[in-house]
Image 1 (cartoon, rainbow, N blue to C red):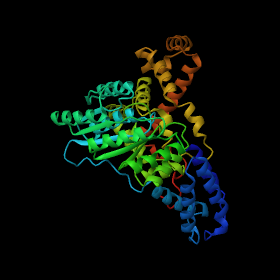
Image 2 (image 1 turned 60 degrees about the vertical axis):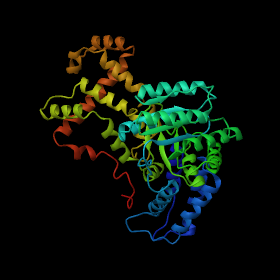
Image 3 (image 1 turned 90 degrees about the horizontal axis):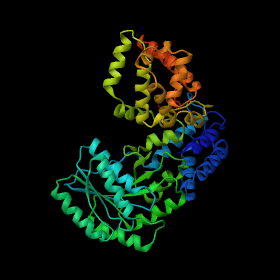
Image 4 (image 1 turned 180 degrees about the vertical axis):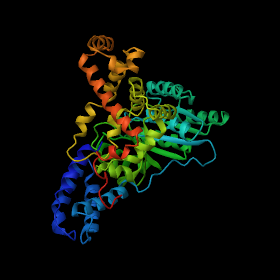
Length: 453
């Protein structure tokens, strides 16, 4: 998400010239390009126009510090306005009410409500240590009821059974009784959707909302739906007391304009981002971090948090002790690193959060860095004997052919993996000798423009 917008903004902001002060003359063409970039990214026209006007008001007459270029000064202003547009501060769910806390999910069919219900339940169980019950009132789609039941079993959440021949309000009333009897902390209600907003659907979800009396009412919106999603968010907000948004499919080819539009149109904060199909693929939405990603500055804080949450610390400590003792980084160690990378969605998912230098083609990197490629590499290592994994230098031509055949891949892939291991082994040796500073010298200087650190 935001790849095209980021590229267009970088291009527009790199063209601004002049010294000392930002003026109407030297930002006019740049702001026109920024406006076009926003519209191409499916940002609603009124939102784009209001955003550009706020940037212009702040920028004209702004004194440019000696350490900044005019482009960097304008980036600083746009960064601040993007944060404001996206909501300012991250807003977590209010779980302080007397249990059971009821969370109702509303939205159009296909937006990802059922999957989001499971993702949210898993997050509340793991991060907040809450006991969660799930219930579906989507009596129009029996498959949705069955899907939620299976997801509840997968994540270890409680589930209130329902069927297509029941009234949605009666299901909610029964779920409220069951959640109290089970002493669960949270009840998540997955409601029905339609392909388009219609009166019957709105009447039904309003009735369910009245019976459930939720503490949080979240509108689930598909990031790839464009202006249809923005219009739907406006209509739901008029009928329901929404408390926030969940933006799904943010890892896809969405242009990103929905994220910039729904917050402005409804005034309600985006709470979470769905970044994959797995039940752990739900991130808290941080407006300041997302603004940095839009401007190509990366989101290192989210990456660090993800690494801290998913990296096996025992394995990491074991590897560190091994390297300190002077032992080599072998192929079994590489497999561990690849498996941990896989748990974070692969290198492709990490690239979205890294500030890449100009000229680096992120899309090209991602095509070689996805889960499929990592699984191939793990398959190659699994086709080796324990001795070969410990001593990669013993792998000669005949061994390579046997390993390739066992993994069902060409010998060239085995050669590529061995070369990758050799590079990583050299890097690990430098790190074990306190050479981190030398390694960092090869990275692009400062991922964030001056004045924004």
